[in-house]
Length: 417
Ligand code: PLP
Image (cartoon, rainbow, N blue to C red):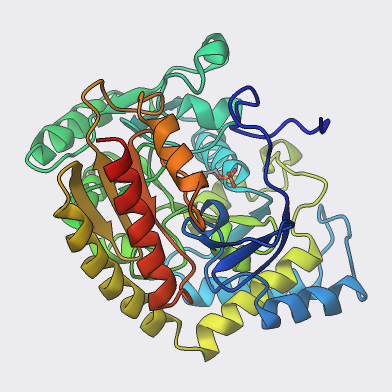
């Protein structure tokens, strides 16, 4: 047995662990020769396809030039180029880039920036508002602002207290807005953090851009900082570069990760407005932003991100996204017609459905293991969230592979009727 302890894997239920040999485009290839279609972009990261030649070349070239250097008080070209091009791409007034290594750290940094902003201004605002069913990562801080449940029950005592507003399901939007407005009236609210348009790990729950816009306006009205966690939704996933775009929203703090390197290497950024940066700008060392990690702005990861930006600049990425979204819509309509698939929903390149489970829903849904078993027998990499099945493939996936995915989902749903 391997000594490896895998993430979000129950070893007692899931042996043997498949051995992946290589990946290319929308497919991963197992050591036993099988080809699997990567329906979930290897945990929502792979945007342009695996082993994209331009990203691979940039990584190889950078690795022989400057592999790593301390970033506290030092800088390098790949990071400078990336920061400049990111700021040009992102909406004003986002003007400052803080680097980290994962979505969770991007969110931790965002929370610390928000609290540091109020602290340095001498205002006692310490509390964070969150949305019901959210997921922002698995560190203590990010679990604190995420949904409580089976994921974090063992660590509950360490999690800090937050205010929660209800998820704005269709028809309940006003209740969410009223709850947010009420919560923002409390004196000590520092920030509200949201996943724009789609709550990912919470079950691919989708809400309207108008609601996102209204939530942003409420926060602005009360002077509460608005943090957009676009770790999953960024880089085209919901049909536009940022999900916030569809709502005409510019957050005070924006978290990006996953697709920033096209999904090739770990890297994340937290972007902030001048007001947040300036609250930390001082000749007083006590006001600096106290956060770093050993690999902050690793040059090789930055080179991969620069190649991702070049692909967005030079290639018809938006056209690929639009084409995929249209094909996904057709697949969703076909699947929604099947008897035990419910709640069809789509945001750009993400489609999701719930397999009807009379025993209940959620991560520990009783049909989840049966679904997973069915997918294991098909040439697909699909990983349902409880009884929710979703497809979020690389943008280069072709119609033949999409058809195989659709059939695998139909077969799985049929197998558990
Ligand atoms: N925020 C959101 C919205 C996510 O979907 C995720 C991961 O799926 C994270 C944060 C955490 O990112 P990472 O797994 O890179 O730490």
